Amino acid sequence: MVKALKNLKGFLFAFILLILLTFIMSALIKLTPIPETWSLYYMLFCLSISCMFLSMYNSYHVGKRGALNGALFSVIFLLVVFVIYMMFFSTGIEMDLGLLKYLICVIFGSFGGMIGVNLRI
Image 1: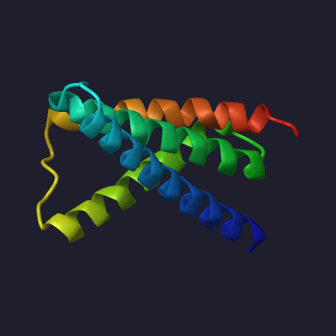
Image 2: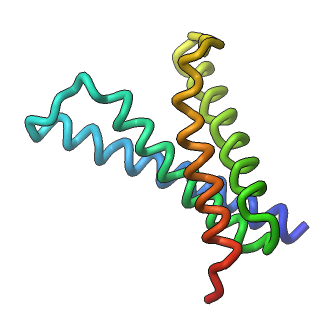
Image 3: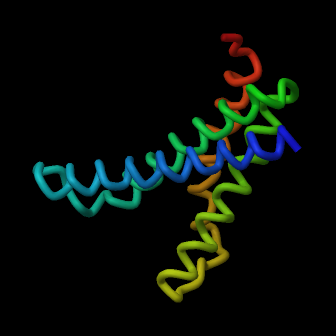
């Protein structure tokens, strides 16, 4: 039960980080001359950082199989984000080769899991 609560706490922290990074990126787009056409890549960066943080946090508490746990937590996080996106915007996610770009988030999550397992504070 304690590990489940820590995992849920990690998901909550990852959502908060994703929201903060999204607001920061939107402020940068609004206030600086960086191109708005790359907003998909900015969001992919924010998702990747959130997945990496989530995997580091949760793998630290799990303590073993960091790459596998990190990838699994990242996939679950991405699925939850997609479900929330579909609920708010009433559109679906197209299942085609365009989903391969989210593999970057899973790789970042796997890397974060490896860091989290080996991190000893």
